[in-house]
Length: 190
Length: 221
Image 1 (tube, rainbow over the protein chains, first blue to last red):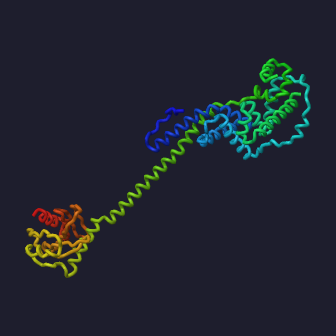
Image 2 (image 1 turned 180 degrees about the horizontal axis):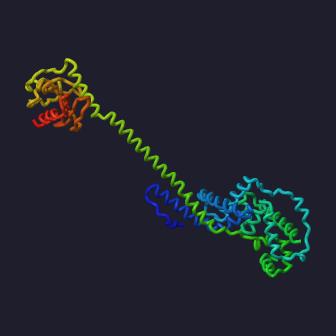
Image 3 (image 1 turned 30 degrees about the horizontal axis):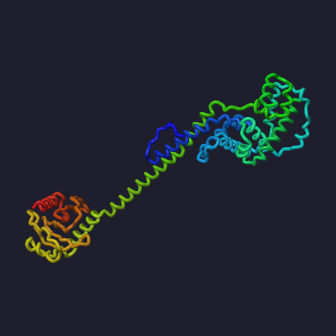
């Protein structure tokens, strides 16, 4: 690709070349990575469950991404950016004391596994609200997998790269996440 | 039932959907969970912070350049100081003055006491490998000659008088064309010039005007 000459810099000198490279890098970054801002924000928002945190973390993630843009090999920019966003959010949540809660009590939630009468469920705004609450209520790592799969429609492989876990773990998390959503919704809509 | 059907059913508020929701809640996520869009202004903030990020290294670059310049100036200044300290002409001027003062304090002012340049000039033959210009100068009587030693070479000292003052005129062959210059040290005046492959130093406690007069007479005689 060619960088558009957005910034006038002196040419020929070493400083000029460096400035040129920097301008080119920034133009390329903005062209490649900025368009995925919504995906970045959506993921951060679902992971943190807080708009202000999400905004700060996305901004931080973009800076991190820019600094390590040299490692970008021309793969899918959205997945690459989401990995940075995800790590930024996890670091933040861990620091704040929100440990990933994937290992939360399986039995309590299993106990609620009673099939509700489908006909009794009336889908309405309340149902959508429940959907939202149930997704937010999922353990962080399940939520991450579900959001990346269902909202970003990423492949298992891409999710496994982002979350740095084997594909099998991703599949398991998605399956368990779906099951919990199902239970949660059933409970909410009954 | 697929997700697309579910989405349509959702809009028709069909209870049949409920079954699907329970069988495939993540379909509902894809179609009905909220997709948060970035708040307005976030993109601008990010672009700004990228600008700062980019200018940060450039600040360092300018600091580096400034530091290099400072270092350069410092080195130049120090070298200049060092050079001025060992400026060969100043070193020579010191030696010239010392020779002059020494000639006056000791008993060794004249090796060949004579007011006759036909005596003084030949006296240097065989003692130095050059023939100094010994001249009769109006108002500055020749008193004689002496051997000196400067810059690792023998030099001729021609001694002239002016009232009660003594003028030492030192001369020796030199490849370096330096001067003319004048300076005053410890109340002594020194004048230096170059001509015909010879370097000349005139030094005396005589006032500067009269010493200049002497130099002018010598050079144009």
